[in-house]
Structures are given as C-alpha cells and as structure tokens.
Length: 328
Image 1 (cartoon, helix red, strand yellow):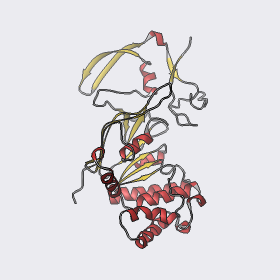
Image 2 (cartoon, helix red, strand yellow):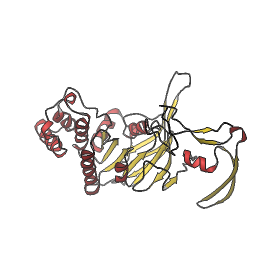
Image 3 (cartoon, helix red, strand yellow):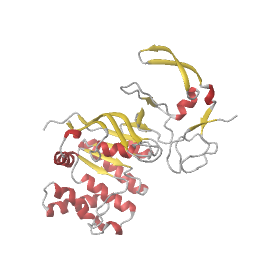
Image 4 (cartoon, rainbow, N blue to C red):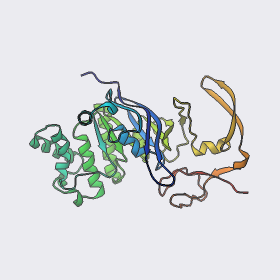
C-alpha cells in the first residue's frame, strides 16, 4: 500500500458554538490551515480557551466543523458517511484525551482490548495484546481493575495503552502526560519517541509541557482560534516570545501576540512603509483615544496577581494575559 505523503490536512477550518446568551455565539476556530506530513510530530501550544480542544475534535472527525474541510490519509472526512468515517478512524488514528475517557464498567484489559474487537480481532487475541501493552506501560499488575479503582495517572496509562493498541498511523493527544508523575511521564515520552522514530507514527499533541513540546518537530501557537506563529524544535512553552515565526494566513490575516503588540506600541493605525519579498515595515502612532497599553496586572478569569512578572499566560488557570489601557 502506497503511503500518503500528507497524513492530515485542514483548510479554512471554522467552528462556531451557537449560544442564546446575551454575548452571542462563540467562534472557537477562525479559518485554520494545517498540513501535516506522514511521520511528523507537531505540538499545539497556547493559552487555555484558545480553541485547542475544539481543534483536536474537528481534526479527528469527532466534531464536524462549521466550515472548511479536514482530510485524513488523503480522504476528506467532511464528505464521508458515518460508517465510512468510523472505518477510516479505526484504521488510521487514535485519541488520547486529558480525562482518559475509559468505559467505567470495563476493567483495564477490556478497555484496551475494545478497539481491537471493533476491528474484528478475536477476543482471546485482543486480550493477549492488551495485557502485553499494559505491561509495557507498567500496568500489568492492574489489568483487572475497574477505572474507579485506578488513580488518575493509572487511568491515563490505560488510555494511552488503548490508543496504541491498534498501531495507528496518527495519534491525536490532548495533554497526554498531564495526569502522570514525572517518572511515568518520561517513560511514556520515550515510548512516543520510539514509535515516532522507528515506526513512523505521526503525533499531534496539545500540551503545556516543555518536555512534550520538545519531542515535536515543530510547534504551532494557537490564540483565539487562530494559528499566530510557528516555533521550531525545543520550544519554550513558558516563553513563547522566543524563536517565533509569525503566520499570515491565506486571507492576509496576522494576529500579534500580546508581547509583540506592546513592543510595537499598542493597538492603533499604522502606515505601511517599505514592502519587499519577505519584508514589511510599519510606522504609526497608537490611537490617541486608546491611550497607552500594557499587560494586565491581574488575570480577568481567576484574579491571579501577576505582580511584576512578564508572564503571558496565567500560571493559575492558563488564560491568555490581556492588554489594558493605562489610566492617567
């Protein structure tokens, strides 16, 4: 079977959550584009509430986007029937959710064996493979335990075993090591690296972890439903201002992260100066009515006090730190 060069592609991806609340609908994704090569590992980084979880669900075919298309292994998922979509996902992609999402009435080995049963693997063989995968992840002694009997970290290891059991070509993971202790986290990352380097498995991982992001070939910075920048290997998730390459999408839209907006002088009108291939200069004055802008002193979501730090993400809740007008 010929390998598809691009394992995952999204074009003009929008998603809107309809709401009858006073402030109206919520636009979670705003025209995203992504092209992921087979065997590539990409980290998606950014503040809480930027659209990361919605993005993962749309890319994996768990949620239909409001507009745009998503192709998995060369097939446009938005045009497939329900059964065709299920079959494509079973053969191609596995998911690792932050919550684990284990079936509460099945023990660990049955949870891991379930995807194989859906693929038609005999129950005895499925259980043997499940036992081997759980043992590989240090859970061989807990194969008969129900999810309620497992700690958060143990549940996550079972969820990871379930994702790996079908030997997927692509793994979509939302904070896969968030509930794990440091030792287990390193062991899981070592397993991911082995699958990535030796088996050519592709990874798209949402993370706030420096170690997980360092595993990726590149990182995409997501803010307010848009990819605003790309970072190379070993991105520092605690300081995304380093080694940042801004992204201008097909519509010409560019979103400036808060730290860049401050360095530029704040919101306002800017005159386009010199324009050349790969070069653009802007000259302007901030809009007078807005006054001087600076990073907020406290988080509007959880009231965390930033004190004198330059943090762009709230260490308490992960929200993006906004800019506010300095009152005279």
